[in-house]
Length: 206
Ligand SMILES: [Cu+2]
Figure 1 (cartoon, rainbow, N blue to C red):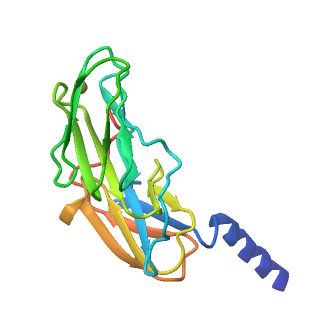
Figure 2 (cartoon, rainbow, N blue to C red):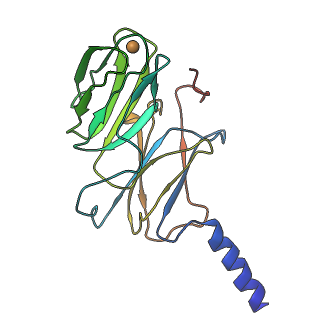
């Protein structure tokens, strides 16, 4: 009896990455997983001091008249490269308050860069190609991750109580953001955040 209980607890534990990780699932009211949502966490005790580094490159590539990735998380102060691998020229810009920038026409195998000094979301477009669209999310916490195809994001080391934020460009709420307090105690299944999207999530057409 006691052994069975220990086994059950062990199995439950194995399903949760680590006690100090924060696992979040973002889904629609209908239960569909929401991909490419940006999940961030700010501990009540404050974010750790020191530079914020993410494991992905600070880069928004243009290839096949498409930005890659579609959503890029960067720490405030990061310099982001915009390499162009297309044979046509692009003219990349954002009109988002706090993160306005413009990279005038640049061609194949050229790159430009821009330093993002304000937190917030920069909606990025191309003056030449209307259908090119991407989002750069500038954050001031090391606990930030995009959700995968299963709607899940795991934030390593995000422990303690704090505030969870979920952003996606089509979330129906002020600033397309949902904010929720998180208690010290983590649930084994992780936090579930239900969002209303302006349109049903679709696979990204390229
Ligand atoms: Cu373009």
